[in-house]
Length: 526
View 1 (spheres, rainbow, N blue to C red):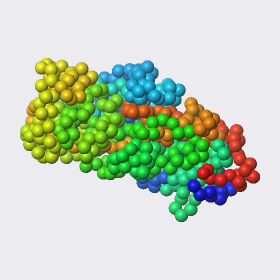
View 2: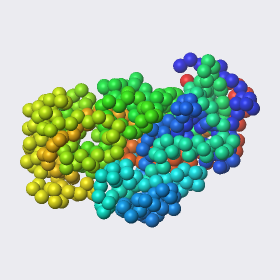
View 3: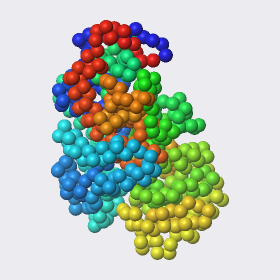
View 4: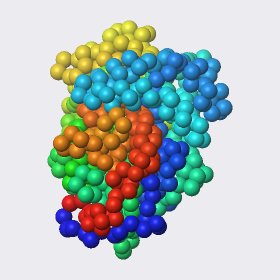
């Protein structure tokens, strides 16, 4: 990398805390640093119109511990009262949360970081509520209540029961409203380009602003996302074909500070070959569109058969509740011929499609053979697959089926994956199909932090003047993911990073108050 001549500090370019990023993790860090008395600058790579990172595109579920519906009510927006008679929410304990995380990441997660995330999850959303973030139940997330009998209790997955009002758009609107009510400064169109460092001590950030670089000095918090928007890095780390997948969120998460912080001495950690990847409509745009946010997601596959273009099933569609399987199902879809698959529903389950399916155009046919012809899939393979699956469904499946719980209604067709729950025959036309492809949300590999959100060097020591939170950090997720854990991880460690970075700046640490002679010889990290 080319060495740059540093800009010496000036009052105009000196802050206590500099936060790189403009989404949930970054803004919670900025607000916490401000609470702790710091003068804060936020660097957002996007324009004001496109601000918010991946957070703005999310369904905005926050996976938190709680004691059931009554414990959530104090932070819920009053509009949620309509749902109270219709929903059931079981408690979600720290043990439940830890077990789900351990299962989805196959025991590889950093136990200390995960423990902190879980233990501080609910107090963090309470703190966000105090900042003006509004909350609601996910009662209409995976089901359209207007299509379910009024007497039916909608059982919410306890770990996926809470989200921000108006989802990611509401989350970002509320967080920026909180930021704008303070003297926190926000620079738009200002991506972090590099760290200004002497050895493993960070003094600030070099910012790319149009035709110039601007050096800004202070204690640094990196909250600038993963590398999922960068096709070159996806191909390099995730493997062949990943440069071609659709990106569900922001176009600005290019992984620049992954590369630069590691070059400066930060320790890479976690699952660099892993990512949160889901089934999305095959007609979805190649990169996130704020007019659609996450509305092209297709998560009702537990009630469907998911077939590839050879007419073969390739996963257990009913393995678990969708919030514990959706983030790995995109991987399975991407691995199929042509990177495409087909969710097939019949009239027994078509009413269970979540509301987001209304953004797509299904392929509909009166018979399965006609459907195969319309889709261009292998007709013989598809008809044989469905027939063998139907034959394996229990005779009393319809009597025992319950779409709102893990009903244990299973089928084990010979030569096919089992279907562990919601195994009902596909027999009643018209048949409805949604073609899906893989959409990447965020990447799992990142830089190592400790429980104080300090970035750790390759030698195992904290980097003075550098903190991180959110998708740029690694060690949290491997192979799979529980819905809402990422936003909580970003907010919990954003709050920790902001508080600790502000404290470091007050104590005159090397990053915050580098001697003049040192500042004038400090290069941009190479």
